[in-house]
Image (cartoon, rainbow, N blue to C red; front, side):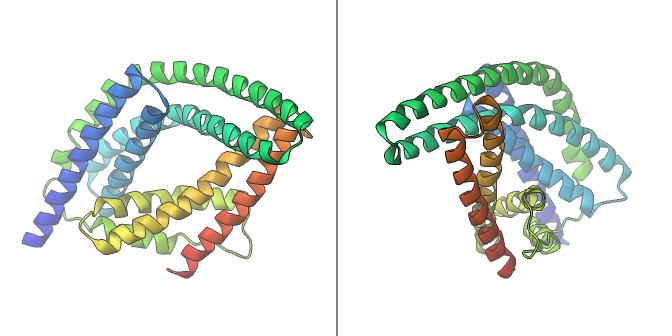
Length: 276
């Protein structure tokens, strides 16, 4: 009984920590929505979502708890989705700069000038869209922040005195349940695998005193980073094809990076799959 109570207290403490971090992140993002603030906002919402979904899974018949958590998840999803386009554009602009710099090494002087021009056109377009997406995000945050706070404030009371499995055990179960057929890996399947695996990573990270949990979290992070890079490059390749042209130097360079990233992502996911 003592072990169960201690485990519940640890989860409640973890929730309170995540709640505080999210509140601070929301304020920071509204005040200065730079790339770091937006990225932190996305991560904060995903972490607290992972914990709340775990609690729901542990207590499928707790009516009072389910109502409160579902309202909180609805608001968290709204905030995360609003921040998504801003985060994507931040990453895409960094990738454009990275790929342009790498391509300058191998291109001729004539092509370098053309490459620089294409880089400016693409980056300017992404920058304008970033401003528009940021304005939408700020508007949504102003409305969602108080609603989200009300949805989250009573969750600890609803969680009290409820038996919980450890975050690490839930993370391991999610990894085992999340299969990926390596003989039939498409981009869509890989992206779905990444989305389903994120919760496992965040849950494993929550159990800071467990070496096993931390090792799993690090392995998952590597896989997620590799798949995430491919997905970001895929989106950027689509943008470059529209904004520039299909045969432009920069578009071709981005496509080459995307194809390489896909190979790396499949290998990374395969390594994770084999080690389960």
